[in-house]
Image 1 (cartoon, rainbow, N blue to C red):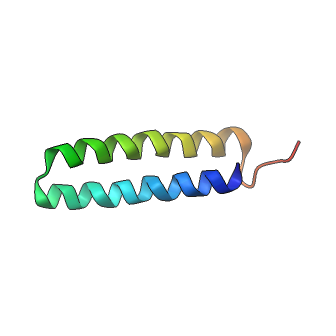
Image 2: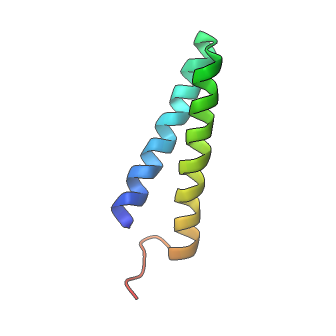
Length: 59
């Protein structure tokens, strides 16, 4: 679960970067998908850190 959390966190960060680029290009559909991706993957990452801790406990 630890590696999956890191991957999902990186996806959330890249979605934020994509959102900034989409604002520069004024691409509305890209903004919507990037924001949705950042919210979903970011929330999953934060919830995993809150409930399992970092690094996660084994028991």
